[in-house]
Length: 423
Ligand code: AMP
Ligand code: GLY
Image (tube, rainbow, N blue to C red; front, side):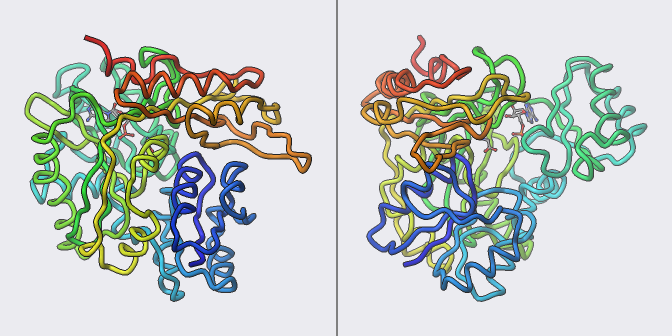
């Protein structure tokens, strides 16, 4: 089977690596891909936002399945357009992707169907938002841009002054453009966070898999937000009882709610949860795999990824078994000096082969010159996933791999999965 995977990050290298293991696969193309995806398939120089070119390529090359990985093209309706062109596609419709693309729509859906989440109010005027803010205790609200904002659209102000500037920044100064022309003020919840993933096809929800990611640049979760510095799973606090509750109260009701709203979901759903004192509650839904979570989930997926994607795309997930390993996995990301601010590119990377003796290396911002030299081409450069019988072992393996890799200015967090082995 000829498959086209859309995307270029670490998540996409992990997905390509897993798709390439399928006996069903004849050829794998990745648009636009990176140096890692080029090792398991053929990169095609088309960007994720070039929908016309992607559709033309898929038609001309007689691609039998397109897998769309990133949020932006999904929210912008690429999956709908591919399906309209008669191409079998894994990924939700734009209507279903509103669960990620509009935080206000998603919040209304959860409220309507009784899915536990933060209490929230939507605003388009800064005056009424600030007034509402004053009616709540200082530091008890979070401010969220309605639309996609490259993972930066959530602000957690501790004071009324910071709350006001977050509100005016988004609504009056349009810091996130159209995405922040409406906002949500949500109750600030507390508790451990977990990302839970499941394949969804209409009302059918596959076996779920939890993991934890690290968003901040600095050790101890300080500093600026990034695309993700690492991940581990399954989390130490995850139990069968919690899993059952998350399915019953969140995943299954969300799939049913989407069907009832004529926005049936087809793809992978990502529930970002906080385990509060009153139980698991939704922080946000996403309509795709997480990055860096996919880099541990693909090695944990014991079933054939291509079979599953095809089953979802053909609406027959109910006849497919999705099996996840329960072995602990840890993934550590190496980033360029300066990231998430500005950073150099074109820096030579060494040690990939030695790292692969310890774990699997997934590339993100990498390129390979024709002479074979590997260079950096992004902020998050690559990462290593390690596994073992315990989280501690998986952590040691991932760091043994990272320690083999070097490039000038390379940075990584040394505390990924550390909290899971304390106490
Ligand atoms: P998001 O972009 O929605 O994933 O939010 C980014 C981060 O902000 C989350 O991982 C949480 O740590 C935090 N956050 C978002 N919403 C809330 C909330 N209602 N209460 C507490 N923390 C939140
Ligand atoms: N891990 C965060 C995200 O993919 O949005």
